[in-house]
Image (cartoon, rainbow, N blue to C red; front, side):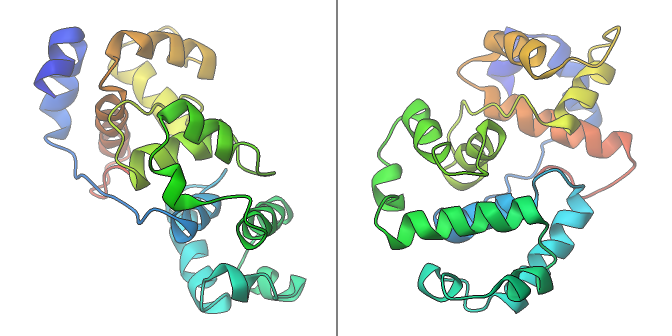
Length: 200
């Protein structure tokens, strides 16, 4: 955090409001990506609810088992059409040996992102969140995240909410600690909403 503040003094006031954000991590691998799929395009509260339903409806949440489930099972888990497609694409890639999570951990950030984005329904946001929350990489940046955009606009007193491209360009100055910047801005967003459950 100190290094980030030195790079961009605006983070000093962000840190004053948030304190040290919790370093929440998700397990890498299949379940980690499944949890990210649950959180695509929904609020944090909705994502948590979907994840609980997935845990019950898809148990045991292992590729070989999930691969044999029917459409009704996925619907029972609260998954939308796009999420079902993403889950099926992910599961098929693993079952067919096209995706190896153990090998993935040895790849650099760009290669991890490229490999995950080959899966239908997994885009840059999902891949960057995987790098950040599952692999603990220090320089991941999910610039397409709406909460980050809203938080940055408020924290830095911008004239308007930056889009993914503008926010990613801004974040270039925060390398190699963009993951720290993301966690601080997520925590700031939680403060904006008056919540205590900061971060992802």
